[in-house]
Length: 292
Ligand code: FAD
Image (cartoon, rainbow, N blue to C red; front, side):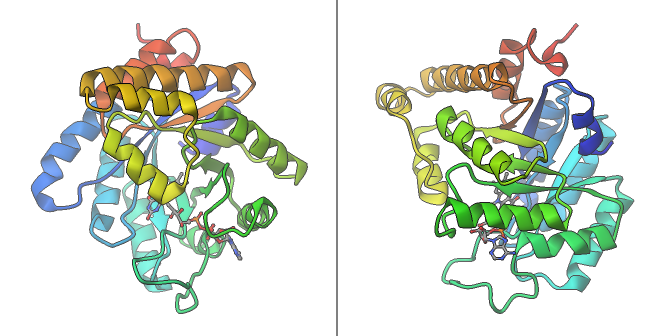
């Protein structure tokens, strides 16, 4: 099913992100973990795509597996260093495997690369027409409530989003954020700019203190004082931190839903137990979270 159809249904949704294996040695354990997440029957599941190439072939396999379990899959696709021929091959394989949804991304600049000038496709907006050329896909893109680190300011950032929407992007998924006020402000800026596609709020339950260091260095996300206190107090107590992270994420989600945001995406890091706890916390709030 296309995600645009799921979103048209008019009810709040909860979807989950998983990542594919990096090497063949861990393939079976990752399949097991992603199957456990799929067994929770979220509204849909996304599968990331390795910019460095190591997990590319596995994105299709994991997404296809998710579709076979009866859950709609969203396959991520990047255009870092890609040629039209390599993208065509990947898109045909996705189509043959029954995948109807793609998150079109540029991908992160590889270490040591400072410009995209040598690439055929320099931005996600340039990837979208290629996706549409080689299959009947519903296409989503990424957006950044705290702006993309390469954007000069929020105005320039929103112009980049407009280019993606003009190219055919049908929904946006946000980078993770930990302060809803920043997200509301961003939504206001998007809508003011006339960008009206559905926006899915990306929420990350940070269950390991080390994860937070990586998040800050990659996304430069603002960490509210309240979250810093949680990390300070429970950073070296894994089970306590997990419980606190689930409670924080739940609190963020309920506030978003109460304020009219309809679509929530959880960065599960392949942890079915975390995804399940969040579903349980929302069982009377989001229809797909209610288990009979
Ligand atoms: P772009 O949309 O190309 O934006 C990059 C920068 O260029 C921004 O500053 C933007 O404002 C600007 N820009 C955009 N369009 C134009 C234009 N036409 N002309 C000039 N400037 C423009 N990475 C992976 O490698 N694999 C994944 O699976 C993956 N999944 C992700 C999922 C989500 C929800 C998010 C938020 C990010 C994900 N990423 C993933 C990371 C992403 O690839 C990086 O953030 C990357 O640096 C930017 O990708 P983009 O698609 O937003 O790029």
